[in-house]
Length: 415
Image 1 (spheres, rainbow, N blue to C red):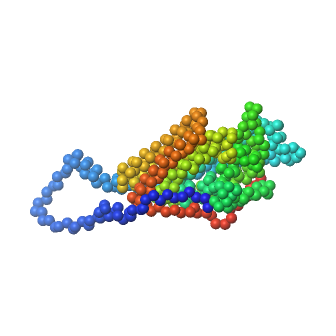
Image 2 (image 1 turned 90 degrees about the vertical axis):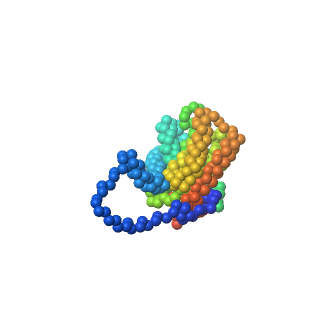
């Protein structure tokens, strides 16, 4: 089963030891009786002294509040992007259903013609605009997933959705790691264990990078050349994949809404997902963004993998910000180091992405170098997070993703 391995870098330190070091609360003795012959008015402290005493009285409560993690904020962040992903996948599904209906209409009205060639010949602008809209909606959905991935993929009770939606390989590539599920197309064809929805199904179909998912390679922008990403998708495959993605996004949203986050979940996600830079940079190196038209990769065509890495790191940074007070209460210096570490790693990847956006084309050798540097930063950072988890009494352990029982079957329905 596909999973990212939890990094356990330091042993846990018992929370009881930390509490014991703080000392217990002594029971106040009963006040002794005093005989006062004449009542004496108590002297009121001066204004400055009173303010100082009030501040001292409030200080323990303030410290206690600062030492609490805001797990509700972590969940709210995850829900926000799961909701936005679902809204985008729903819009994407509707656009794909329109595309499917147009292909089906041509098949019915012109049974002797290739429907994709007919659409390009008779309605080139309309079909190009429709597919451009679908791509925009796909990018919107994928963006919000990447912003959630650091949390979703790192929490065992949610990680199934990372495998199914974004990261699991197809059985044809990794039979021992592939998730067992089936996509039944509207024409009766079945795709068994086809991998994840974003990068093994919808993206290759939409951008024509997997031959069997493409209906026709075509010059959609009218510049006289058929370039990478210009294709009319196989309507059956794209329909099934789009409907399936929308169903999976809805299930993921429900799972995130039902999730009760814990410190163990959050620290576990941080230590699991932070030190994964090598994997991402390798995918970037092999993608069209570096290899160009010679790339043999079917995925990471729509968006640079650097963009995805930024999204993942953003989610992890948000997660740490909301558990930071717990670490700061135990070791302010360690907390400051971790906060700086996430800021620096986000900035490092963000700078590379900005250069790429400005037109710089990196070489494969540079991708390897940057990947090694990012991995070194991320590994050190994950070690500090694991140290912090142990310091506050969080015992991290490797857990397999929770996989739903029973067969997983998605059946496409023609609109």
